[in-house]
Amino acid sequence: MITDAGPVVSAANVWDTYTSAATVVGGFATGLAVGIAVATLLAGLLQMNRAVRLSHEMNALDSYQAYLNLCIEYPEFTSTTLAKEKLKIDDMSKVDDLITPEAERYVWFISFLLSSCEKILRSANSSRKWSLIIENQLSYHRSTLVAVWPRWSFFFSSQLDELVRKVI
Image 1 (tube, rainbow, N blue to C red):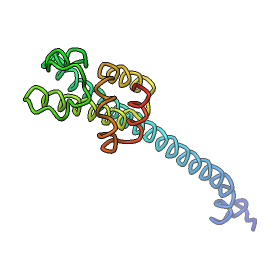
Image 2 (image 1 turned 180 degrees about the horizontal axis):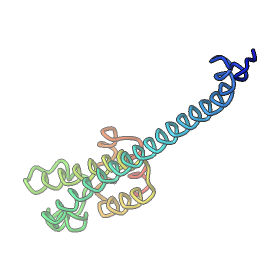
Image 3 (image 1 turned 30 degrees about the horizontal axis):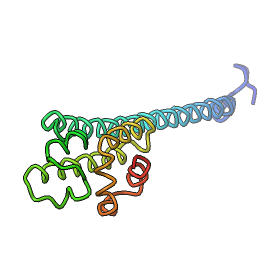
């Protein structure tokens, strides 16, 4: 409608002019918000994954450190050669049948080693570096493991069994 003062503009006509622009801006803002939310979620998931891996690595390091501390405390048991000397035996096939405090200590030392290896394997998620470290430590006790592993293997995981069998 036109009057002497000019065209009469209704409120509906004003909003109609801005509706399409508002729809575009609103859609863009919604899309941007969703994009930011997804990016934040992905960053959070990556951070959480990194934290879990770090925690596993720290568990493996703690287990290895505990074993190394035991080695410092009982250096005479850090290899089969030294243990044979300490126990005054030549054949390790009956080491877990000897009834002496020192023989018991060595058997528990080997048990602690194997238990630490098991924990490291679980924590390290099949890391090649940790597998090599475990193989190295097991190799110091090769002849003892040859003697006791057939009786002890069922106490441990198939992953550790595979590494022990590789060493022996």
